[in-house]
Length: 125
Image (cartoon, rainbow, N blue to C red; front, side):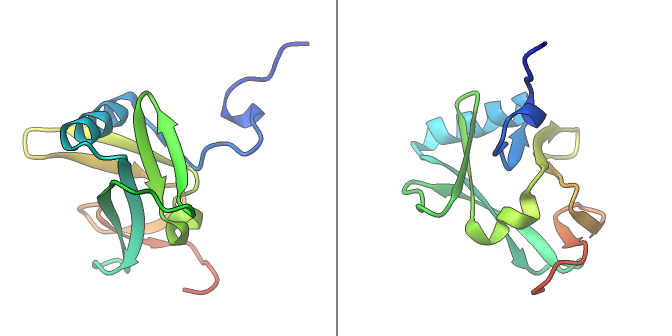
């Protein structure tokens, strides 16, 4: 029988996936600043209740979930792991703006800019 490959065949699959464009941008940011990676989290705020946070990391926290892909290193803050599970991180460039885009299956509502989100029913929020 054929070998199972792909993310569904791997137990403990990565919490997030990073598109090649996002990986290239993250790698560029890490290299130019000499950073160990980019930490992604969520915090209360924004018009939909929660918003994503991104910050450079020089000293990763032992509780961060680490996702490495094509030279890019993304760290997911412990509090954000359940919210970001299954998210695809993309990088888009348009005439008006360029930036990271989070395609998150857990989001139930988002504001127009996509930076503020609320999540499906989750205990403790």
